[in-house]
Structures are given as structure tokens and as C-alpha cells.
Amino acid sequence: MDVSANSSIYSPSSLCRQVFARSAAHISGDFDAAPAAVTAPWCLTLLTEELQLAQLQQLQAFIAERGWAVTAIDILAARPQCTAVRLQLEAALEFDRARGELLALAEEMGLELVLQAGTTQQVPKLACFDMDSTLIQAEVIDELAKIAGVGDQVAEITLAAMRGELDFQQSFRKRMSLLQGFTEESLAEIAPQLPLMGGAQRLLQALRALGCKTAILSGGFTYFAHYLRDNHLAVDVVHANQLEFEAGALTGGVIDPIVDGARKALLLQELAAGMELSLDQVIAVGDGANDLPMLSLGALGIAFHAKPKVRAEAPQAIDGFGLDAALYLFGLNDRQIAALLEESSSQ
Image 1 (cartoon, rainbow, N blue to C red):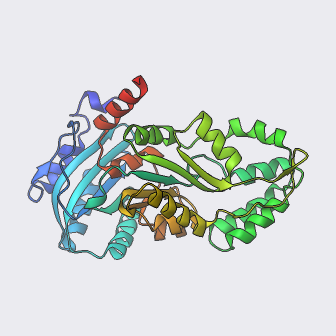
Image 2 (image 1 turned 30 degrees about the horizontal axis):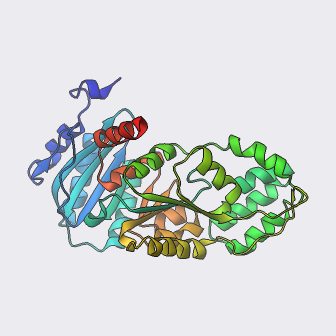
Image 3 (image 1 turned 60 degrees about the vertical axis):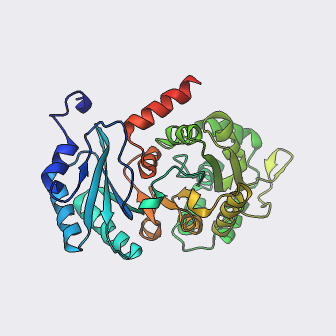
């Protein structure tokens, strides 16, 4: 069913008018050319496969109980399996408390609610990404370990590190020691098989078209990050861990410095300074505990398909959608995104 062909079948804007018509001065149509300018101090983006009236009513009651006011609503997406609605909020709120309450509400309602300052509803100048389980649907070191016959041992160490239960540097050295003897020839066979994360190409293509620089800041390996940059993803800068080879095979050793959470944060700040950018022009996206330091620095820190600890602590989170859903947090709607990608592809 093509909902865009017949807005009477499914119309998020009509649902929003039923619930918010008395409070919101502006409610867009489902397929407006562009969203309204952001004038409120806060924006709340609702993401769901298909919006229900009861969900909006529950959200409206939550907002009213806290004395917040919805001043404008824009439908950013209204297509099969993806509805995105942005509410501008006039509210005197404490961000961390409000974010936590909204995460709980979203889980109860079966959708996603992303809170951000109104000033961050803009295209960033620099976007920094974790690689494993963020830009690709794999933890590379685990894939190498499976082939080397030490998969269970390495996977358990990886999970403990991503949950924040182990120091990343110690766990990384321990995992690498188990991969001694793995051949460079095997690495070359694995790289083309790494599955990209849904929406990754679309997001990075759009960011490049918008003039935003992009960086991979990964606790994974430069070997694979460079492969992604050279073959699949519009990435400008790569910082990751270097594999140490001897006679065409891994030594099991580590080349310092290891890219852990602290180094990711440092690299983000160094990249921003080198580009003469303030941190409010930078965003970061990642899924693991070692991403939290960089997620806390910029205008947006998006936990993507993240572990519960990370989702609970990160400023923003996207769980049930592709990476390209981040474009809605920059204030873009589907019509703008489609035009941008079409223009980029034709160049």
C-alpha cells in the first residue's frame, strides 16, 4: 500500500490536528515542501512505523501534565513503516530527567521519542561515527575470531567490554592475542562480506551533499574502515586501530595508541578544532559503552541500536530505524532528503 498516493488512508497530520489543534499554532501537512523554522527551545521527534491516535493522546496527556506547550508540529515522514513527527516545545525542563521520562514513555507506547534542544535542529558540520555495529552490522573482531576458531572466547570478552564491565584497552589486547596467526589474505576475503547498516549509505551520502565532513572513530580496525571508505561509504577521515602483521599474518600484538572511548572523545575534539568548529556544530553516533565519551560532547550524541546502558545514558537514541533516521533530527523531511539525494546522485 502506497500511503503517499492517498493521504486519506493514513494521515499523521490529521491525527495531530485531532489532538493538538487547540495548542499548536502550526501543524504541517503530510507532504509539505519543508518544515517550519524552529523557534522553540526544545524539539521532540516521534518515530514509529505507523502512528496511532491513542499514542498521540497519551503523549499529549504526558506533555500537559508537565506544563509543556506544543507550539508547532511538522510531519517529517509519512510513508510505509516510517512516520516521523517533530513537535516544538515551549518548556522549562531539566534535560536528563525529561529524557529519562520520555524513554520510559516511548517504551510503554511502543515508539521512539527523541528530545533535543531546538538549536541542534540543524545540519552538522562534522559527524563522527563508530564503525562496528553502527556503520556495519557486525563486530569485526568477533567475525575474525569465529574463523580463527576462538569465536566464543572473543565474543564473551567483546560483550563484557561493550556492556562497560571490562576496561576496553585490556579487553582489546586480550582479544588480539587470541588472533595471532590470522592471515592478511583472510582479511581481504572478509572485508567485502561485511554487511552495511541499513541507512548508512543514505545518511553519509546526504551529509556529504550537505557539506558535512564525516569521520570514522572506531575501536575496530583501519583495514576495514579504509575498505568501507574506499568502496561503500562517503567518509572523509578514519581513525581506528592498526593491525600488526609479520610475514603476512597477525602477530597478536597491538600498535599503540589504542582507540578507546577516551581517545574517540579526544579525536572528535581535535578534528573539530582542526576544522575551526565549535562542538555545537558536531554530532556523534555509536552503539557501545566506549562511545559514550564522544556522545556526550557535541550538539547531538545518538546511541544507535545501542545496549541498554548506552541508550539510558546517551543524549539521544534511535533503535528501530536505519541510520538515515538521524536526518530527521537535523530538521529535514522526506521531500528535502529525496531531492538532496537525487541531486547528489546526478552530479
